[in-house]
Amino acid sequence: MMSRNDFFEQARPRLLGLAYRMLGSMADAEDAVQDTFVKWQSVDGNTVSNPEAFLTTICTNRCLDYLKAAHRKRVDYVGPWIPEPLQTDAGSDPETDLERAQSLTTAFLMLLERLTPKERAAYLLREVFGKPYPEVADTLQMSEAGCRQLVSRAGRFVRSHSSRSVPTPDQQSALLKAFMSALATGSTDKLAALLADSVQLRTDGGGKATAITRTLQGSDVVSKYIAKILSRLWTEDRTVEIEINGLRGLVEYDGARIVTATTLGFDTSGLVDQVFMIRNPEKLARLENRIHHDAKSGALWR
View 1 (cartoon, rainbow, N blue to C red):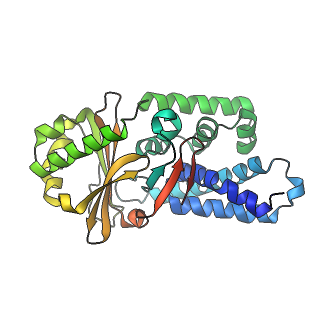
View 2: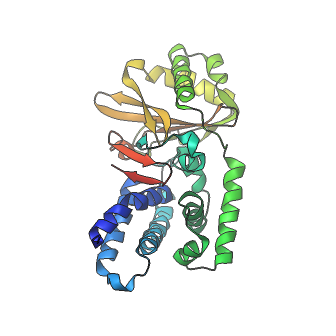
View 3: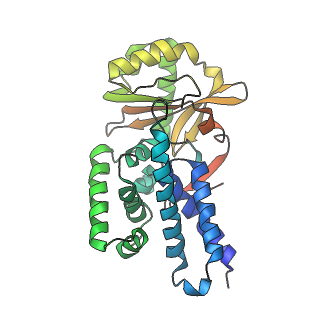
């Protein structure tokens, strides 16, 4: 028979996957999962009829508490806020489980930021982690009908703002190479061919690194900024292609230290419609550590 600790360790990757998607911070996600473990240790196991549902409920509600605190902190955050990037190693082909694979991308996590905390929790539990509606309702302490409304409302929002396709890894690498070529040459024409008309560029320095404190929008504005400003700062020999949140991305080094992580979002035609550049050193500190991702279960583990 599996011990209580063994049961929790088996559940930990799934709980971590849920918490990271809820919070956009691996440090906060790990804290929420550890808080769940402490609560699990203090409860009489004989009183828990469904241990998995119990752990999910404790972790979800702990994340909701974190989100309340995060909202207060973000009022004073300098410039755009972007989730902490993860260097991922996908456990399955994104094309075989598209919806769950997309649920880790930076573009998707940014969409979740625009939902209410309970909408976010309900949508993730139901649509990403496949929990039945009665369990989601129990977790959020609301009626099943109300829970269905939350998921439906969140789903409509996500579908209206998100493409349902992800370029293949080879296509992503080709786009990144073209992106780097445009940087090297300073050619706005090359860049414009890669960018959607409505493309947005955000940089997150958190007041701790040089970054734009507003969102740039439009192919002309973004291509000129990348070609004329970033091209002066980026060099090919300091830039490495890695997988970031399930998509191919770029990291730039200054010596042994990562100073910028760049990941892209794509529209339905394969053009770049989002450019995310993370420069806040607190969010880059652990990017060297690879995280494994199982798109089918949503689990994350080192």
